[in-house]
View 1: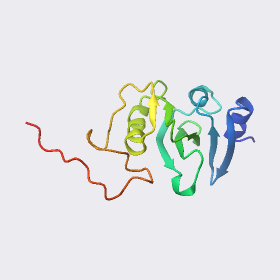
View 2 (view 1 turned 30 degrees about the horizontal axis):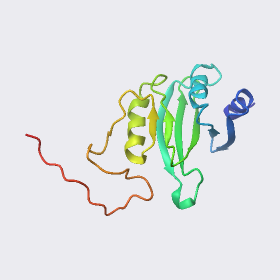
View 3 (view 1 turned 180 degrees about the vertical axis):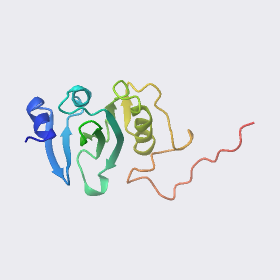
Length: 160
């Protein structure tokens, strides 16, 4: 029986860059441009039926000398079929912009804000991209590997 990533490679041969599976979790690395189309496909195609966007996060590969430096990581779940799928998109440091998925999954609003806040990856078309965990005056993105752990941040006081 073909796996989810096999079906993705069959339907999007030039957009699925690589696949792998471990411990029952299937992963496909896809192009940034294809993400909205592939995400819509895995949500709407009955073979996938990914009705839950579980999480969006990112990984900074600076210390591993990745090129591109970042990966945006999307975790999907089908509650009807009880299978999961992970999509990854490689993101350049100098062009750290991803398309938003808020039109497909409203919960993406919060997840994308967290990735923006922690890693500095912007989401084009996001309805309200602003910090969610750090305060607005915070400088930098604290989960980037080159963020100085001892950096002093501007202090904010009570607002009158």
